[in-house]
Image (cartoon, rainbow, N blue to C red; front, side, top):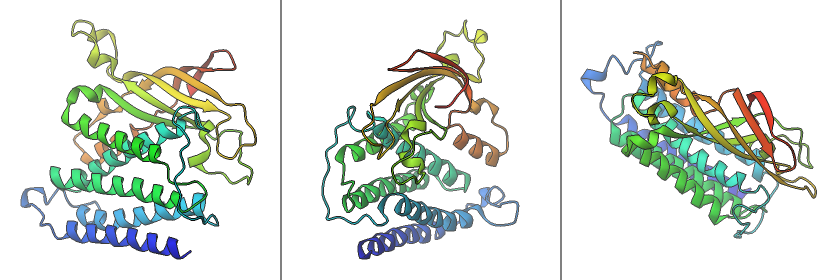
Amino acid sequence: MRRLTYRITLLLAVLLVLAEHLSAQELAPQSAQRDTMFLGIHRKTFLNYAIPVYGATVFYIQFQWWWKGNPHAFHVYEEGVWNDYSLGVDKVGHLYTSYAYYLSLYDMMRWGGYDESTSMWTGIAIASFHAVSSEVADGFSNFGFTPADLLFNVVGLGYALAQQREPFLRNFNLKFSYWPSPNRPRDERWRLTNDYDGHIYWLSINVHNLLPEAAQPYWPRFLNLAVGYGGKNISHDLINPTRFRKFAIGLDYNLSVFTAADDTWNTVLGIIDRLRLPAPGVKKVEDGKAQVKPFLLY
């Protein structure tokens, strides 16, 4: 419990220092109108409080799901990558989490009126702190500190930054879909983060942009093609499961084509677009036949 108190205190200190730094910046006169919310609250002021509260809430939920009643001397655990208990689905999850976490934070900071550099470094700092603190906390539980998990977090963050520097990479976006699976761990406690059977991680490809200009009118701008990876019987703490890899291919929606003059709408739309919404697809599990699903999520 003492270690948990130290970790929460450190998290709050970092987030509050960051909030104080951000609040010290002056509003640019030309962005004053943009920086005012509909309730008359400055967007920057809102973010300066919302980000620390959000960070502390996420950490608390993680504690309840993973670390509560689970103390252990710090240790490192090497579980492999593609042949671990989740057949690598958890590793792709780490990659996606840092990717989506950074881009969402960046978009919110830009929405709040912060400049490019501040938005970028704030996103990097918070996404990195989340990844490192989670792995260190795992090290003090029976899960153990897993270097491969942290490596995939770094790769996900790196890809998000690369997309911002290289427009071509924005044609290949990472997405996530989830539906609760029938599998439950031994303690019967549902946790999104260990119900891996319900996860699929997708690479959504902007086909319209990649086609030759003459062929682009024949492929709708709002429609992407996505390939996905998941698993069966890979949820955490299942008893002696026979695990199988799961592959999927399907249509996906490119919500970026529906942007408008309202930057609040665009920011929300961008965050939603990091999820793969229900759409037709084909799923193939190693132990079964290919299945066509009109609303493939998992």
